Length: 413
Image 1 (spheres, one colour):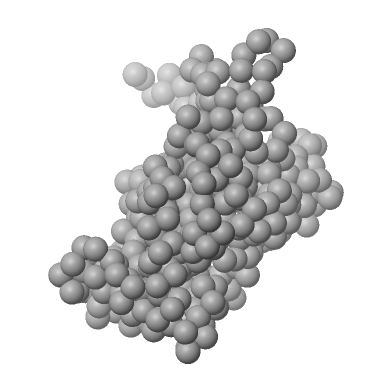
Image 2 (image 1 turned 120 degrees about the vertical axis):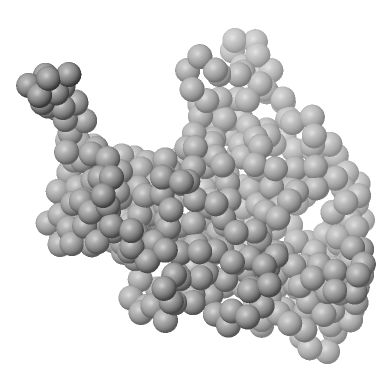
């Protein structure tokens, strides 16, 4: 291709993309790498803090969680992470400077919101309850309907949402990039990416930051570790008592432990674990996150298209109407209300909804019947069994997210 034609093609591509869409240059700065260390590595036990600085930063992933895997196109660096933390907490991303990502994802509420529906720009309410972003970096599909494939895709959406950050006037991302530059972020972008602010770089930096929002080190995690150290893969009340002893005051309070009744509480947690298995909760709430990352219809609240809407045109499946993503069960002590509508103010309420077998089937005008997931069937439990189940669920409460993550002004160690 001759030089004139090449310049013409490049000019056409630039015109189509717009300046906010430019890719990261190939000679972007390398930055200080971040490496995740989980409990499967010998090094994990030697790390004394969450954030460990050096020629590379080593992040100590909480007990019970694997190391997250970032896309090869967006390997984590300190420079990206710092920029992402700042942008996540900056209301400037919204059209009128009133809403940030952290407005709806609050540490005291488990990186979620304590309202059924969050308040966005101009007082608008979100369409669904704000899900927690604890351990969000492990989920392959995000939002209740799974429409975003990974954090880099998810991070692009709030800026364009008229219920969250966008006032509906003009091009949301072009205007957001102008505001970012006007606020003096250009040097931070150049340090992180070798370019000025772009939509692509904003998404990468926020995703890098969000990938470090963890919830682990629960009473249950410590019990699993205790059993493994004993050489037994079967957890016992003894192991839960060990877990209670090594947990923080909030975790202990969540399960009702007061220092005098640890043995009794450990028995209740273990009993609740057995109920969890009996009621087949683990069919959907499985793995390290206690989520199968799949979509199921529980018939909660008013019917929405949910997963059906999140599927691309041409691949829509009518059986997914009303189905929502299975949430993880970590962090329940802080993240009330529950459900994608936020209609359950207590854990007991949403647990009972599941035990009842969900809501009723509904026939649409088209004749299609929207049915409750076949995996959800009524389960008869005694009051004691239900209370033990709730105590077990509370034992999944992790340690608080490290302050270097939640406090945008916190200096790095």
